[in-house]
Image (spheres, rainbow, N blue to C red):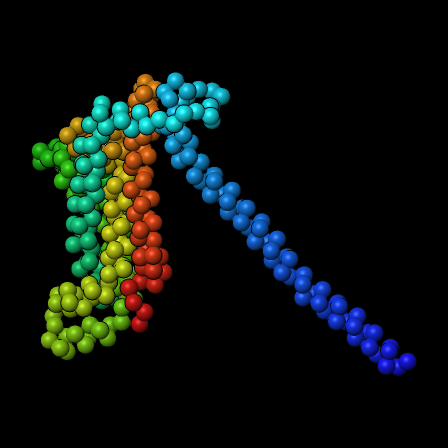
Length: 298
């Protein structure tokens, strides 16, 4: 009898322990289901403008902007065809790419040695320069662009791609220096000292040792600067007129016009967005690795 009484509580305790072990997985499962639904709804809300634009530009013009909206229709690409055939969108796209590439190259050429110098010479002067760069970046855009407009008019370079590219270099250079400086700070100073013992100067150390190690950092900074320039509107709207007009400026000129022109604006916005999405997908591992850990771990 004693044996039976001792066995029964043991079985009961075992069943209770089994139930306690099984409960947490069900709770975790409910948590992940709720979290997944929340993320799905959030992503859907964030993508809804893009989805709505994609639907509007693929509808026939007579039903593209009716109220209530039409969700069942025969898709058409006529808006994209009209965009390429009846406007100068190809030239505006070329202007946008030229400005983005030139500003990115110049920003990196200036930013790499500047960031290296600031990372390797800590002190009051370096801190002051970084603070001034941050203040310049935080200034209202109009406070920076309007003087550039006057300067470009005086120099006779208004409405040129290189004038716009130089302006974007000046605007985005503080961000480039700050970002690259953080990457250089992650590289151990011992590598500089070892290179100089082998006979390298500061410049050759930067060129032969630092830049190869800074691959992810340079790529990260270059991608960000390229995307900033590729999507810039205000600076391009003030410093260009017709010859150097970019795609964001072209899109705004189509708004408030006829329905076909409004559809063309949506098509142009789609074509402007797709390269950005493509770059983000292709370079995501470099962006994540670069922003998370810099170039190397010392």
